[in-house]
Length: 404
Image (tube, rainbow, N blue to C red; front, side, top):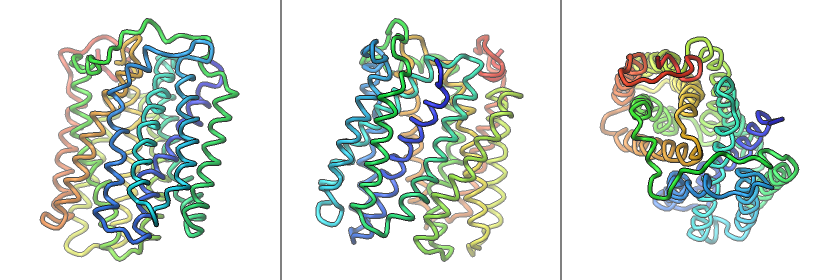
């Protein structure tokens, strides 16, 4: 399919920018409007449908318009709905109607989750095995670029102009995405294969022991990833940074180094395979968490805090193409979107629980103690990635990662 990589990059960039606004931008505006933390925290609850997309993901595999394109029809429909829902945000500013805003965000989250599933279904169906690492690297790079775009290009420059100006800019960005989907054929005229997904067997993929092993590795390494993600805002404020400075470091800076991490991961994965790359990156993550656990001490040095966030963000983005390229190989024919949504939905739920736990235990355990625990968990996950599995099946060493 011509332009598949460019299409994946733009569609992912467009969607990921909206995700950044949903979970970070709206929370900033609500806090600035004077709402208590109990209300601001509901933003993450409004994002729950994003993680529950596996409940309706089989519909994406079973239904689609061949003339428009099986997955393109879903991407086109969801982009149109996103455009309309974003326009509704203009009528629900956080200053006057926070709960109406949260309801709109919940709808937006569900629609965006559906679109992400369709984008991955498109990639999983049409990427050749030898192109999986490249495709997933492009997705990781696009996520990082979206964070930079939203944090530095929209929120930083337009945020002080108010809610309506910021949302209008985002609506315009969504309109560009809609035009792109209208004029690019994507998978028009193609079918993804005989649909096998059912509404009640979303988790069939997890019967595969290889998938369970990958999930166990991801969940264990996720402790190290969640530590940085859950602690970074608290560490920055406690280290003496203001809100604006902390936002630039946690959003723009973290995504900028993430872009580098994802780019550097690709040649490593292609040379060593997915699992070996996960193991090496996991050991680096473990060393980083343990090292910063000892370096932070009782006083939070601003330079050490910033270094910890940037180093661990680099490694987090490097893990993304490694795990996703393996996941592509395990998605079944006719259920690409379903298998992806089920795996990543459960992975996301585990991650959010870990992030919440790290944030809640900060005052009792301390930053150094939590990072030490994260370092040990990451070391265990990295070791698991190097273990030879007796149930492994033959596959591409480059794409799957020494499964044979």
